Length: 349
Image 1 (cartoon, one colour):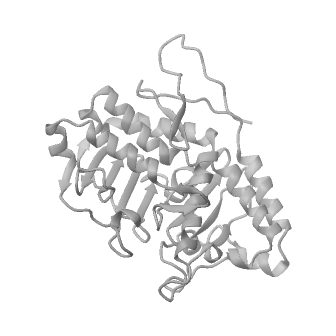
Image 2 (cartoon, one colour):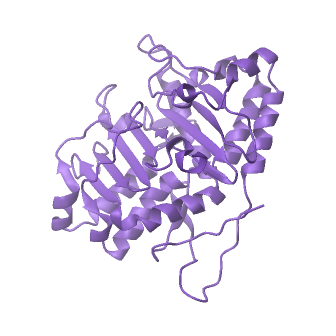
Image 3 (cartoon, one colour):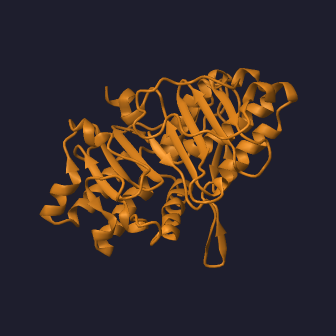
């Protein structure tokens, strides 16, 4: 079984981020004689085992509903940020599953994602309950769907798909590789109360982006800030074939400290996946950091109502406030893609 080491392709320290705080740094480098970091065991066997355990909880009719052929390219790309009632999904609806079946599926998500990634997704998902009963549409955690494309395998490619309003995860698995793109990373409301706690599923992402922007000189801001008001997503659902738009300030124009901040922001998306696959993912992005652009549209204040985009050879990230539903800063659409590996194109082709 192959294992992977954590790599730093550019010589800039990468950070593993959990829950918005840097917990450890990538210590490996290309320096001769550098001590290797500990390898991380392949996660695929655990993902396959958890998925098969989920399937074992289903009835024959449910298995028929949730499973699609690997050749079903329509289902692979069948996802949306729209709520139930405006978009028809296929598979199994969360609200129709038993508690045992739901717990079995959560185990699949937990082993595929990192602890921080799993927490973020669960918080985005729970936000939808705050909209339930409003507007005549179908909001709430029950209206999320599960689909499996292909047969769970440690060698041949397959995909699990989970999502609904404002959050979707597409995970393509091939051998030791896991591709978590495209995924929709949004929330409405972007801030809500759970018990006695205030929950901000994307709060650390906004803080990291604003911190990077605030570090820019006036000349750097002239390159990075492209408009005075936020814009909508360019790379959302249905935009799988859209070419990357390299606008803003390039990584090559940043200082070493700013590059670290840029990688910290990207890691909040790269570390959605488990530690093994996140290490490879962040090394891919790090190796093309100089060709990765940061663009900003909107106020340069900390109000949260600005759009930003990261575009590089191996990553597209968008964060887009929305006017619908009150304060724009409380309704966020977001996307996370890899131009070379959406739906596992680079690992399954």
